[in-house]
Image 1 (tube, helix red, strand yellow):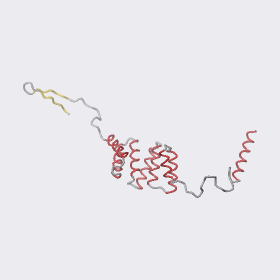
Image 2: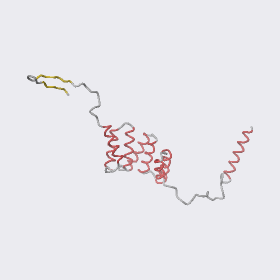
Image 3: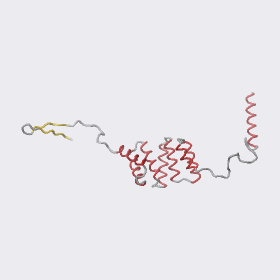
Image 4: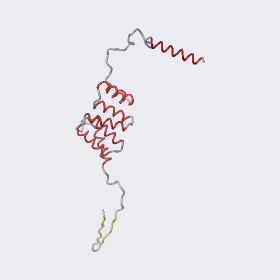
Length: 186
């Protein structure tokens, strides 16, 4: 019974605080140290910083905020796709990065990130094509794109060592006196 009364008192106190301007509310002034006239930091910049810090979920939220502020463009979509990639949401990342490339087919970061998604999904041949486009548009300036392309080529190119190996069929044939020729069927 005592617990119910305490809970009811707490609820009434919170209700009274909300009606009087909120908990810690003052006479309409902003808290000390806050400039209410300043604009917030660009959501893309905040998201990029959070990505560098390894805070991918927070970065995704910042990118979503940027989409609301500046609109949905290839840069914002690419950033959202990149955050989803880092969070392991490959299907979402692929879909969003493809949408970014519909907005701007020459946007190199979206191409590179889509290639990474495709590699993670085990599609090196398709990733190779995407990385080749990114590499060409970037004029070979980015080491990471060059390395991604190299890996995609290595994984998508058929190797002479792939597949079942047959034992070579050799036969030794005598040609004249003391001469032998080794023949094989390759």
